[in-house]
Structure formats: C-alpha cells, structure tokens
Amino acid sequence: MIPQDYHVHTLHSCDSLATMAEMCRAAIEKGIPEIGFCDHFDLVPEDPCYDFFRADAWWQDLEACREEFSGSLLVKAGIEIGEPHRFPEAVAELAADHDWDYVMGSLHWVGDTLVFDPDYYQRSKYDAYADYFRELHQLVQQNSINILAHVDIVKRYGFEHYGPYDPESHETELRSLLRSCAERDIAVEINTSTLRRSIMEPSPTYKILTWFREEGGKWVTLGSDAHEPDQVGFGLEKALKAVSMAGFESLASYERLVPRLVPITNGREGQ
Ligand SMILES: [Zn+2]
Ligand SMILES: [Zn+2]
Image (cartoon, rainbow, N blue to C red; front, side):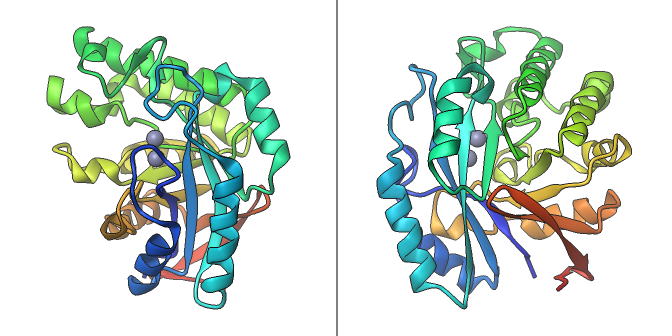
C-alpha cells in the first residue's frame, strides 16, 4: 500500500486541468489513504504560474473535498512555493493567512533562468548541478518551509543534456544542504515526476536519502507531482522502497504544520 501522496496539483496550478475531486477519487481508487494538495504559488514574474494561484477559491475546493471524502480519505492542505527565499514577506503573509498543513519549498529558478529551459544547460554539467544546489541551500537556510521538494529536479532535463549524473560528484555540498534540512526539521520529499522522464529514477534516489539519514534527517514524504488523475500515486512504491532501504522506518504526516512519524510496516502504514 502507498501510505500517502503529498505532491498533487490541480487546476489551481497553471499547468494542470484536474479538479481536486478527481484527484481525490483517483487516490481512493488506488487505496492511498492520505493525499496532500500543493498547488504552485510562484512569485518570479517571468514564471508561467505567476499570479495564477487564488487562495480563496482553492480553500473552497479543499473544504468541499474534505467533506465529500470524509471517512475515506485524509485531505491535507499544502502549498508548493517556488523560490520562497527570494520573497520572504509574501511567503510569510500567505503562511499566516491560512491553516496550511505543510508548506513545501521548491526551486525552479536559478538566478533568472528556469531549470526547465534549455538555456539553463548552456553551462557545464558540473555547474548546472552545483549552481542548483547552491541556491537550494540558500532556500533551506531561509527556514520558512516544512518540506523540501524534489532535491535534484535539475536532473530531469540535465539527463537529456549531459547524460547520467552521479550525486557523488556533489557529495560535500549535498551533505551540507541535507544537514541544514535536518537541523531545521525540514522533511525531504521523494518526488517521482522524474520517473515519467527519460532519467527514470526518483528525485532524490536512495544514495541521497542515505546521506540525509546520516546527517541527522528524520522526516521524509512521498510525492508523485501528479498533474493528472492517472498520475496520482505514480511510482510511489518505488520511492517507499528507497526510503526503507535508506534506513527510514517512518514517513512524516503533517497537520497544521506539525509533523508526526507514521511507521512503515512491511510496506503498510502503521497506526
Ligand atoms: Zn516543483
Ligand atoms: Zn509540483
């Protein structure tokens, strides 16, 4: 059983047409007991999702789903904030105005370049990763998030430009980044959107999760980054296996910004 999917988008993101209710039904059909919505909240003016998110409409949908699926699905309120370290005031305002269960921080822009843009890969392979991890570390140090999304998402297109990447080439900076997460009680997400691309491995893989654990990390979450109903839960058995192999015995479940450990027992959720 897949215990959770904490990274689900809906038509409240500029890049999805799915309704929240459709995503809930997909989770129930797949036997997933807990789903977390985290639509894009993007503040870089050049971002395709800039000024798209409307909190009031989102919360209306969320409350309706909580009511409709009560008893069969736990529906968590999350938000995927892009580049939160660059917009501390707007982020603090959004966080304070609503009862989020978790705030997820993600990095899609390095400086003024989107990492999904081929232009980003005009630099050397080493720099493409090093520049990403450097800015990601700044994001973490700003300390306003609960979960760090897709730690090495840059490989999604990096793979197509440079071929396979070995996290060991960046072990020092990755360990330092992961240590900062552990010190701040930030969870690391295992995101499976990369399994739908040519690289075909989750972000991050087992190796980085092992380092996270060695650096004192305690909290991990699973996210499919679904933008369509048939992507809900996608690849999360594989992600769960990587979590267990790295020595984690529990996943983090959030309620009103407070995490608790939910044991993974033989691939099944504990009490
Ligand atoms: Zn993202
Ligand atoms: Zn996302």
